[in-house]
Image (cartoon, rainbow, N blue to C red):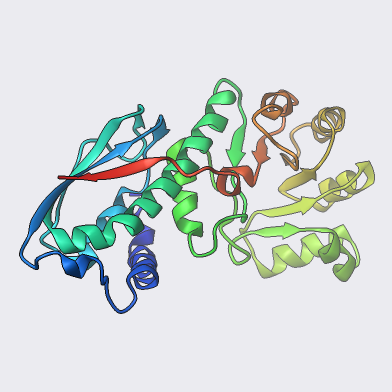
Length: 278
């Protein structure tokens, strides 16, 4: 399952979020009689791709295991405006205390999934994969990368520890592209080696050095087409820089294998959700 590797981190993230919001105690919820119960319904006020159920659930499980949550949708489902997402019942105090934190997770991850879905649909008929980047909300990287997958896009490297991306400064420090690639392979056998290239000369150097993937950052459409023709399948090509929904398809039609964009995780607008009590 997609969430298997997230379990421990998920609980830690939820614990920190609750501590941030509740602190020493919810003094407003304390005005409610201790044994009073309540029911609530979460509604999406706009169309969206739902994501974040596990984080939402964990908030209330952390506060009071007696709270019951009945979901009417699943992660990845498309919902309409004013559609009910889930119903909750249980002690009123923890329901009220967890409302904002639970909705924060759900609205943010649903926003990431929703935008990712738009990007994926724009090029669904083309043989290109849309990748996220490391431009994520601090503390929510794995959560957002999960949401990207739920939306239909793919993940780039998770961090600096699980992927090699050789850029200009790395090349300068190593002495050459060939030296950087050779050292990368020697120290990390079996790991994909990607090199950022700025011009035709560097593209050829990276190809001759045996790089697995070439990153073409802020290249024009004509430059991307030339790179595709020159590379001729000898390495994967990834386009990035200035990617939007408006130019995504044009970039994809050049024939690159991947398009990476930080927009999936940083240019999001939280989905408008409400929790209605009764």
